[in-house]
Image (cartoon, rainbow, N blue to C red; front, side, top):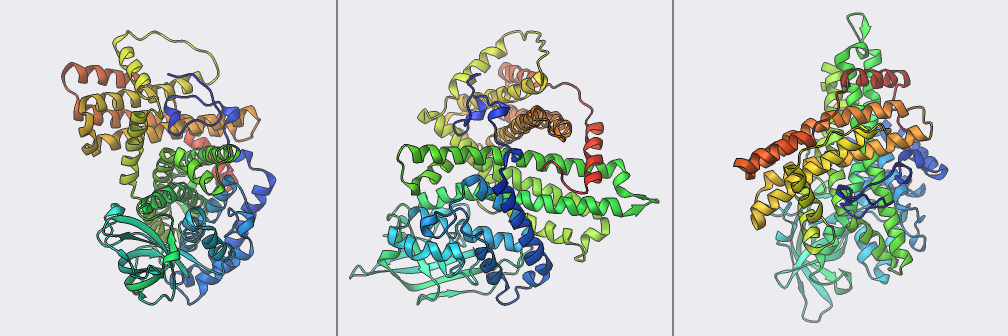
Length: 594
């Protein structure tokens, strides 16, 4: 393994490089301004959004746009936008924090994220100066609301299979759009849409389309399982006349816009899911300490304590991985700016560098939220199935997150696809470490004794990385180009990588907390050690499935023995660790790590 230590690793580099706690950004590093912004977001939700959830779900006329207007007045819509276009110019970590703190707003959080993300960023990063001057200040203030129209009835995950067309008129002044888009968030009130269509039959391109343009019509509001207050309609284009100057970016380069914006969107979805998970978790803790059965609060029962503690562990894991990555992106953005990259390329370039981590965050964040709300309903029991309690809304609203921003299956496949492509291009050296692991399998393992602090935890994570490199390297050697069709194997290895990334992020944060004397450091270590113990079993299981799918005979036996070696961890009493975490949750009545 490469022992090189670095502050910001290269994208995907956590597998072969080492971080140190002191240089790892954690939520404990938020500055006073960021804490004040977080407080502003929390107060906005408590005062303006949460008291009106039923009205929002019923899509009361004008309510959602008015809430976005109020958020705009507070500067929340334009916080991350450049000052020259009416924004506040906040950094990427702050923008991520805003997404988290508003993430508990149910349908409002969806409308907000769609407006500030996919509704605004395509114009900011790919628009001409005239387009930016025309739209960005109004999007920053909320005077205009944004939306993004990519998905079609026959092209969901296959975005490039779109059938909507754009034909240039003979005089070259307009494009005529014809086609249909579905599942368009904010479509009921949005003023400006980024719409993707094909020019000349195959040139996937993007256009800025304003509400009220002749030939643009909308379907009725969709009736959905969750996020009922989020406006979702179909768009229909029939010779929709778009000024030629509303072409966004270059003809045939629409995929660059779509995919680069999604990298940022995936990380911010994790942030919003984290905010939702914290809100749902806090209400569940309160319920568990007030609901009595058998003459005692149900929070005193071990089965419930297990659930509460596991919620906290998964939230802590998501939070640690999220802000570690957000700071990497922020640092990379500043680095690109320092070497002269134009402003509209810095964040996109930084997000592309960490696209692997963004895909992992999307998966882990959405699935952590799903766990929290599902077990939240279970803690509430029959009451959790009643709309009288907000946990039922949280449960329904959560489900979309595993579909948004590319399904979790697509993102798992992307993780490995990006790793393999970067390795082939020489962007990341996976071959050398993978070859070294194969040689290590042939050697007799040495008895290791290391009394250094956290040696066992560091060793466990280093071995998890070896398990990943072993499986990935052997699968590529064995299957070669056929590996793209072996989705099950790719997803197995992606799951191993996600678990390892989370475990390492948790450990770095826990050690940093201990070094700084944080009062919750001991429980952070409990959470980390519990996660590592459970992750070792999950990684072993996923690795077995992968190995058995492509190897046989002596190769299979050798790799399974190696996997067993690499996923062996020290014994740890996870029951008592969870009880300690649960006790603090009950004492504090909320998630306490931040």
